Image (cartoon, rainbow, N blue to C red; front, side):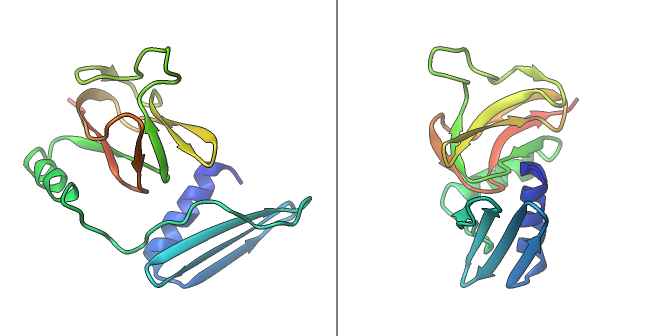
Amino acid sequence: MDLKEIQQLIKFVSKSGTSEVKLEMEDFKITIKTGSGKSETTIVHQAPMAQIPVAPINVLPTQTAEAIPVATKAEENSNYITIKSPIIGTFYRRPSPDKPLFVEVGTTINEGETVCIIEAMKLFNEIESEVSGKIVKILVDDSSPVEFDQPLFLVDPS
């Protein structure tokens, strides 16, 4: 099971409203627990048999002062597609401090092209675009923490 499948499982569990899901396979075990506004995912590999917390996700929608204007602008520009964060972590616009930015406002991107990196638990995850188009707005500052499903970019698909 790869990272994307685990992320899809976390999304499914958070939307389903269940309180606990356990999945055991030959080489690993995953337990996802939800409750009291928090969700916790634990992955245990067979060799060490120690629990490793992956990333707690907040299953209750939270609104901050920043989230309200983003939603309003997204409604006004309904023809734009939002690229959202698939995980919790730290958002980076470039592969390393001495390298150029992945994308800037006005950059034309193709489906599958890396648009940013999100660091989660010392792992650097390349985030690829699921759409082709032109970057209209970058919604997160470089080196900022991001939440699961937080909007990162607005893309004009036309």
